[in-house]
Each structure stands twice: as structure tokens, then as C-alpha cells.
Image (cartoon, rainbow, N blue to C red; front, side, top):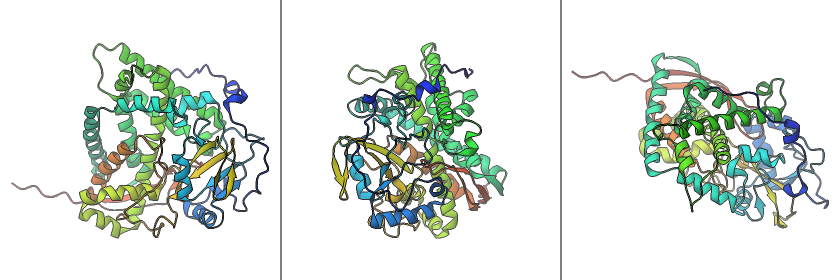
Length: 455
């Protein structure tokens, strides 16, 4: 297979103003002054997560629903953008997440008000509201059959074992953690699940990374953010179209998730090819990046907290469920999502009116002192742990959360027992306000001794 890179897409037309009815314009009602704690600048998002949380903590104490100036790292800067409401408390994030009638997702889930076509191309039901959201989610869920789920678990454990086989074969030593460990399992499992052939796997992973890297200067090069995102989405849709054609013309049906998506039926309805392509794009990002970055941050945290590593090794099977929740909370890879208000309401004494953008700051909510005791402590025994790593609940709660947990359980079962010790360098982070991602991080490790065979 080959990818046709001559996309028949007019970037100017795609990002041109749409009809007024497609976007809910904010009214001209007077807003409060912009918050003195500015969390919209490039400088703010260039700080470490610990430094950012100092600002979030101040907002949690003094102004939990603050009016913020437009974010600087926008894909398509809008000179008429009035700003947005920033939610930093756990209670407000979960309240908005569960109230999908007042706060909708159909206008987009990023800071930008992006064109509807682009939302449909890249975010599938993530940027939809009921009843269409419910229909597509049911159809996608129907593809995850019990047989498929069992096969996925077996495949994940085998893949994790093979990845760590390769790692320890040349140890002790030093490797780049993301390339050699963290990204391998989620990328491999996504491609295995969807039946992506070997010759298209690297392009799939690269394009998925481009979708979320609009503010990372290294990733952009000499391209504009909107150009990078649209090209990446077009490539992934093209790959999906090729996969559909292969299955249509196959003599024998495939046994993969992509085939299940094509055959899924609910109330006599099927996903059309564009909907399948959009879900492929969504999963190429959501199904790989979040697990990759959680793996990287958790390995670093375990290295820096040897007592927690020892605790996990003492009873892996019994303790790994709670440990995974803490891995995700501590990493908080997805940092922001947006909703759009469609009914006048009030949050923390602030009047929110139709058209207002409301941005949910998940890392802040997952480190809220009113919910988490000693939130900055890495505590694998933390329970309960109502972190916001998969969202704040409601109809948009992450569909792939169980798959992510399966992968984390499998890869760490290999790592914590087959590495005697390890340490990490400082992570080089992806430059965006959406994903707390690790581009590169060094891993120095010593393999565990191989038990001697008997007889």
C-alpha cells in the first residue's frame, strides 16, 4: 500500500468562517476583568507542571471559575475571541462534564472554535452531542465483542513481553525511553487492533502525533499549525479508506477491530466510511498518546520513589489496580478540554451565558487539595482516587479507559520484575497546552538476574 500525499483540500476554505448557525457566538454582555493569574500565555505553558500547579492552586483558593484572556497557542487565532472561563476545581469540572445539556461538546473540545468539518474528521463522537453522539458511541461499542476483548488482552500481554525482551537483551545500558519502551506498546496494539499493515505503521504514528502538536515548534518546522493538523487528518483518513477497501475485496473476512467497526449494527444502522475514518483518527491519538505519556511519567515516578516500587513488587496483582489509577492521576497527560455553554447558568457565583467557552483543567482538578490528601505525593495505595485522567464523567467519559489500563498493567508487570533498577533523565516535553507529553527522556537500567534453570 502507499499513501497519496496529494490531498484535495483547500486549507483556506476549510478554516474559513462557517455559517453563523454552526457556532454559538458569545453575546456582548459585559465580562469581569481578566484574571490577574494569567494561564493563557505561551510562557505559562512552557513552565513545568509543578510550576503551573502553583498558579492553579492559587486559582483554586481565590478564583476557581476565572475569566481568562484568549489562549496564545491557538491553531487558528480569532481576533474576536473574548476569552474563556477556566475551571480548576474538581467539583466544577465534574459538574460541567456531567451536564451535557447545558455544556455541549459539538462546538469543539479544544480552545479553538474549529470548523465543523475538521471536528468531524478528527474527533468523531468526542465533539458531538446527543442524539448523534449516543448513536455513534453505541455503534463503536458494538465492535468491542467479548471475543475481541479476550483476544486483545492476550495480545497485549504477549506484546508487552516481547517489547521488554528487546529492551533487556542489550542491558545494562541507556536508551531513549519513549522510542524504546513507552510508545511501542500503544502504537503496536492500535495498529494490530485495526489491522494496519507494517508499511503504514510509521506514517500512522507520525500523523497521530501531528494532530496534537500544533504548538510544538520542533514538530511544526516551517508549516502552520492548521496545515499540520489538516494534513495529518487527511493522511489518517486515507489510510482508513485503504483499510476499508482491503476488507471489502478480501476473500476471507479479517478478525480485527476495523472489520468489526464495518460490520457493527445497532437498530439496523451501520457506521458509514467517513464515520469509521473519523473514529480511526480519534483512536490513533487517544488510543496511543495518553498511554505512552503515562508510561513515561510513571516510570520516572517509580524511579524517584523506590518505596513505592518496593510496595508494588510485594503484591503486584493485588496492588496494580490502585497503582494504575495513581499512574494516570500523577501523569495527567490530557490537560484541557472545552465545553460551550448553551443555557444561562451559574458556577461559583459567576454567570455563564450561552456562547461562553468553558475550559476544564484536568491536572488542576486531579491535584485539588479538597479531594486528594497530599496531592503531590506519589501514593500507589491511594484509594479512593477520583482522578480526572479519563475526563470528569458524563456521556463523554473515555471509551478506551479499560484498554489503557490493560496496556499499563501488562507493560509494568514486565518492567517492575525484569528490571532490577532504573533511573531516568529529565523529560523533554511536547510544547502544547493540550497534552502533557514526553518527546524524549533517557532511561538507564540494569536487568534483573535471570533465574538459573534446574536440571
